[in-house]
Image (cartoon, rainbow, N blue to C red):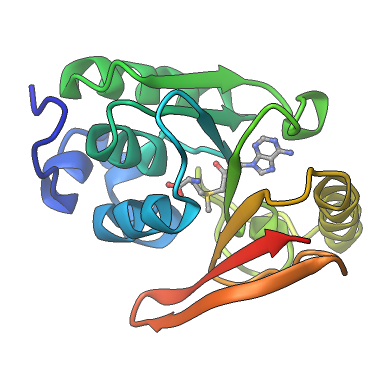
Length: 195
Ligand SMILES: C[S@@+](CC[C@H](N)C(=O)[O-])C[C@H]1O[C@@H](n2cnc3c(N)ncnc32)[C@H](O)[C@@H]1O
């Protein structure tokens, strides 16, 4: 068990994944250092909660939760098998302040959270021939546009002051200020704030 406050590494986390997920971890899951920095940018107060839209196996959630035991880190993920893996990893790694929910992000209330994290959650189906996280490919541009439009509507309805961190691109709707932007070697990381 790693436990709260200790320094989880990518090798440690990814090494616990089943082989098929280990192979895609570097492409589809947030590096632990980025997760810690993103959480710092979201700057949640103790006792509040942040939400990862499309949590995968919970890598952002678990790395962030271990770094900030007083914050609740919630992830919503549509693929049930990833949620099962993530819950097991949270237990193994001693991340008691993580909650991984199974379902569609659009069936959940985004308003209860102090901050939101998005690692390009809808991008998998945006590009022809891009590999899906669990194998194969599914080019579905209309699905991609519907999801990004839905996310922008949800983001537009969030309370003033709400922070949103995007990793690997994506722009919130008008009404957000760009507070920080980093051209990270692994992908752009940006902090937006609702006016
Ligand atoms: C690039 S992965 C990011 C995983 C995780 N956030 C991380 O940073 O480690 C995007 C995830 O979003 C999920 N996803 C896409 N659309 C979703 C939706 N509408 N509701 C819930 N999850 C969704 C995908 O199944 C995939 O696991």
